[in-house]
Structure formats: structure tokens, C-alpha cells
Amino acid sequence: MITFINYSKSIKGKSILDNINFKFDEGKIYLLTGHNGCGKTMIIRAMCNLMRPTSGEVKTDKNYLYGAVIENSAFLENETALYNLKYLSRIRNVIGTEQIENALRLVNLYEFKDKKVKTFSLGMKQRLGICQAFMENPDVILLDEPFNALDADNEQIIINLLLNLKRQKKIIVVAAHGIEDTSIFDCIIKMNNGKIVEIL
Amino acid sequence: MKIRRFVFILIMFTVVVFCSVIVCERSSIICALLDSYYGLSIDNDKFTGFTYMMNMVLNFSMLFLGCKNVNDIFKMYNFIAIRCNSKFKLYVKLISSIIRMIVSPAISFMVVNSLALFIVHVKSERFILLSIIYFFISYLIWFCIIEILFTFNIHYSHIFYTLITISILSPVINFLNAPILILLVPFPIGFMTSVEILVEKVILLIVLGVVLYHKLIKYENLKIKIY
Image 1 (cartoon, rainbow over the protein chains, first blue to last red):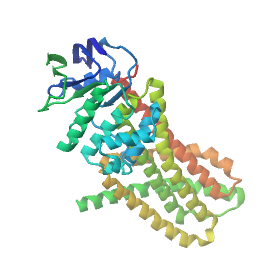
Image 2: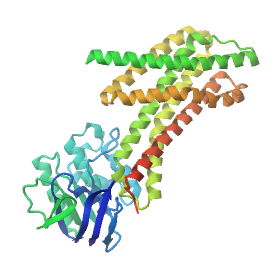
Image 3: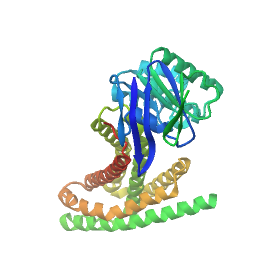
Image 4: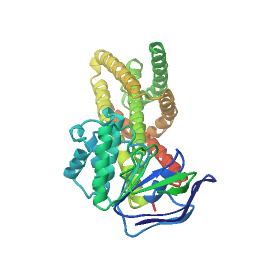
């Protein structure tokens, strides 16, 4: 469980997260929604400790392993998809080439593994971003606008993937706006001006 | 668009030639030194302009590639940061990645550059033919680089910024090279030039290191930290 306790964050005097109190449980898919700049990405940054709070804290039950796509998926453009994933996997050093290739198969990118990222479409880069987020089997998966640039088929692939990860008791948080079908989400958190305004 | 591109290439070319002229002044000093120590007389003016121009182009490519790789690495900042459980590990990963990505093209450039200069200097009897070949190679590389730049859609300001940096750096590099050159005088000129180029590349790497440091400071200011 990840708990936000009175979490606030200001940058240059402007409040971007205002007194957030919320619990994220295992085995659930959360949707953070709201207009652009409402603080969705900041919640994700805060969850994976990429941001220091002005006040409050984020508490965790255990030392979670995180996987995330935050903002745009950017890679070493002149290197292949496989090289990029190997480059990232070497930091934690918990998986090998076989696991990386399996992850690429799940997002339908295996046949493009030896292609340079600069030849990829926006949707393919997005899927590669998602692939790097879950390839190391993390406990918490945080996805910022994962369905951007994806066609219906690939969107379904990612939804199936998320449902599969949910069955493995992962904490999954998706930040997105304008999603029509919200049936896969266990909890919808609506945000406005850095505050949680509604929980469905 | 084609006229714009042509004008752009023309301006860039002028800048590089201008830089070459400045650097040639330095090579005159080297030749004078060699003359006074060993009585070696080298017709400096006729070909060193082109050899140094090529060196300049290679320096430029190295800086450009380095900056591009640095940018790519920083775009991946979030992916890297989330995998590092300490700030120390994050910095080590960033710096080692960038060094590796800058050093590999730098080494290839340096080898080609040094080899070419070595051949030109040692086989001086074939000097006219070699300088013609050199002349064409320099142009070929230069235009290839310009084409690559346009393929990458690099903004003009980045290129000018890099060229200006090189121009400003030239006298500094010359100054720092001077004591090394005097130490190397007993060795053949090809070896001497190769070492000199190596020193130049190392200095450029240091400059890139400073750029990297400032980028890290920028991230610090944004308070995006691992803790």
C-alpha cells in the first residue's frame, strides 16, 4: 500500500499539489483524471520518489520496485529498441535478454527489436515506453497518458496487459484524460488545481 | 528552402574557413619551432589549412554528436532515475553513459584524423596528390555532416552555438597545447600531431563535461531528486 499523507508541493511559490491524502492498494487499477496541468503527473512523480514534497509524505508498506512512463517516452534514438531496454535493465540488473524479449512480445514489438528507435512511430515509442515500465516485473506500475497515439488494437493490447498485471496484485496507476471506457478501473480519482476533487 | 539551405551552408563554410585560418597561425609556430630545432622545413601554408579545417570539422562533429547524445540521455532521465535507488548511482549512470557515448565517436574521429595527418606529414613527397584527396575528403565530410544535420532537423542556433564555442576554444586549446608540443619535439611530426589532436579532444570532452554539470545543476534546481 502506498499512502499520501497531507502531501503538498509548490514550485516557485505556485501550488501544484495541495494536501493530498489517499491510499493506493495492491491489485487495483487507479485512474487519475482531470484537465491538463491539474497535477496528475505530479502525483505519479511523487509516488515514485522523483519529487521531494514541500510538506507531508508518501508512506509505503515495503520497499516497492517501480516501473513508470512519465510524460513522453524518450529513448536513445540512434540505438535499437532492444539496446535501449538492455541499457535501462543494466541499472537494476535483475533481468536478462530473454525477459526483455518476452516483454517486447507482449506489446507487439518483438519483430521490431532490432530496428532503431528513430524509425519508430509515436505509437510504437509509446508501447516501448510501457514495455520498459513493466519488463522488470515491478510492484508498482505508473503510466502517464499511456493510450496517447495508440490505435484501437494496440490500446486493447495495453488494457489486457494491465488486467493481467492487476491479477498479479500490482498497484497500477494510470493518468489520463478523456477516457471513454472506464470499466477496467477500480477507482477513478478526479483532480483539479492540484487537489483531489472527487473519488469514484 | 533550397536557397535558404545554400546560404546556410555558405555561412557555415565561411565560419569554418575563418577558424582554419586562425588555427593555421598556430601551425606556423610549430613549423618555426621544428625549423629552429631540427632544420626541418615544411611548406606549411599550402596544405595545413585543409588538414586543420578537417580537424575543425571533426571537432565540430564530435561536439555536435556529444551534445545530441547528452540530450537523448537527459530525455531518458525519468526512466533512469526511477531505477536508481540513490542519487550517487543516478549520477554515476548518467555520467558514465554520456562519457561512453561521446568517447566512441570521438575515438573513431581521432583515429581517422590522426592517421590522415600522419600520412600527409610523413609522405611529404606525395604532398600535392594527398592534399587534393584531403581537400575532397574534407568537403565530402563537411557536406555529409550538413545533410545529417538537416535530417535530424537540428535548429540552426545549435549549430552556430557549437561553431562559436569551437572558435572561442581554439586559442585556449592552442595555449594549453603549447607545452605538450615542446615536449614532443624529439618525436616525428606525425606522432606529435596525433598527440596534439588527442589533447584537443580531451579538452573538448572537458567542455562537454561542464555542459553536463550545468544540466545536472538545472535538474537540482527543479528539485527533482532521489531520496
